[in-house]
Image (cartoon, rainbow, N blue to C red; front, top):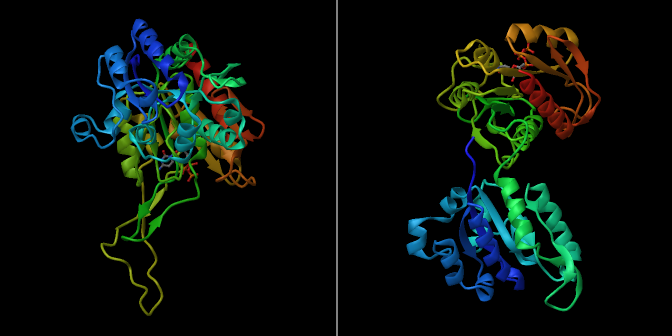
Length: 398
Ligand code: CTP
């Protein structure tokens, strides 16, 4: 796996902004290249010139600086780094990022990025403790933003308490830890499918199912957290892509199969998608009209079985895991799928259990050559973490 070593540093407007210069110096010493973006207020505390001199690259602050935008737009800027560090993260910047406001280069970059974000908050203690900041902090954490600090201490305003930005050396250590994801799955490639597929009947109608994608997204996030390089091939869902996971969005089963094959080779494949087993035998070019008589029965055709295709294919992932959503005879059906699909494990669940399909919890049984192992009911995140740990253990033993 590629070791990340480029940081985009966003400098907010606070007295602690001067410490960002020291942070750039420490990161450079550790071999990490930085590029800087200042908010308007940030530029009041440190000059773009000082940051440019230390980073060796022009520090930017203008969203509509056409010459800079022409050279590198905010989208590219936000993607070219491996990690975005916000130091100092002021109450204002945190609020805007939590709300998804994109009014300047710094906030637009934060909204446009698909890279991990580390924030080092710095503000007055009352501002830090204000319910609005607590809400924003909780929201940003839920969105996957990592935090370092703030520390307790005396502040520039003379008050004492939490709100001082973490020391540059502490931020550097957090940056280095995030840049080099260690973990038992480091260097492993994983493919995860999630969500339903959508098979068109005519230009306005389609066949689909109730899958929300929650379980698959949680598994993709859990594998990435253990250091795997994860491709998530997803049908239509309302979920944001987990941080550090590259998502490929598809609609039909055939497109999902093509995206999966393109993501190979992989060490691990976890197929959680609720792939529609059928599609319309022919897709009507125009909207089907109701007409006066009884409707014609809809003729269906089979979609490709993605899991079985990967199992038989030349690039079969080393550990291939299927899911079995059953409404009856879970043990018998799931165990049968283990051999019929040619996978190594089947995670079976009874989808008639209240709150499972589309909900936040799951009760699964892990089927493998070793037999059936029922897990207690737990959150889908816990199922994901436990499964990721089992995957890491299984690959570690091979
Ligand atoms: N699956 C797949 N491609 C399909 C259908 C299913 O890759 N066309 C995968 C699912 O992602 C899951 C596993 O196969 O990992 C089992 O899915 P499930 O819907 O439970 O089984 P089916 O193959 O549809 O079998 P049945 O309809 O008999 O339950």
